[in-house]
Image (cartoon, rainbow, N blue to C red; front, side, top):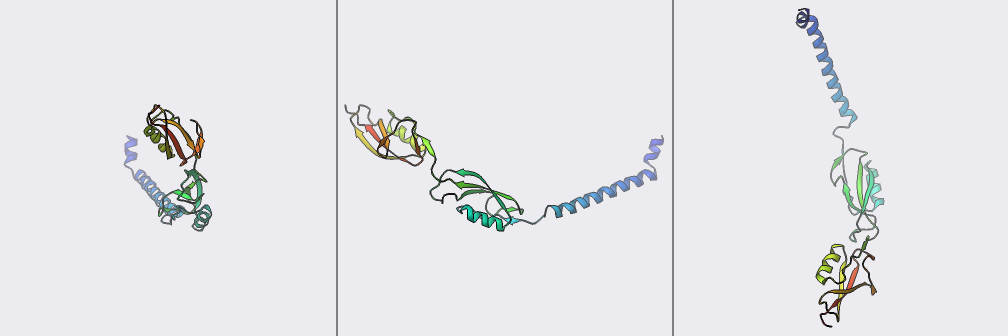
Length: 183
């Protein structure tokens, strides 16, 4: 019974009121402090870095108090200069805080090397599909006497005969010798 009397006493309600005031003050002070600590509302727009060299990117980001990290060097793209930016994260015109890191994908120095698959004794149609999917370009086609009509007898790069497993740069032009169906 004394506990129930305590719950309805002035002493209990007075302490509940003090706790409520202290919690409200802590919440108000916390919200006010967070807006100063986090620079709420202060931001910088991310510039368009696509196609720019790393030297110009460093200068531009330094002026905006942003940092950059090279995430990856993407596949070689001949439309861009070597070591220029292919992609950026966050994207152009995004709003970020000062000191934020911008992640860059840069253009590699050349096409990557790709292993040539075994296309000997397959049709030119199958060989074309396999090689073009890897990034190679089909060059000249020469027909020689062989029983397999339109079958790949041999293939070469710049006059040098290739074997399956050899490596070439992507976009290399591969020439073929195909059978004409005659013995």
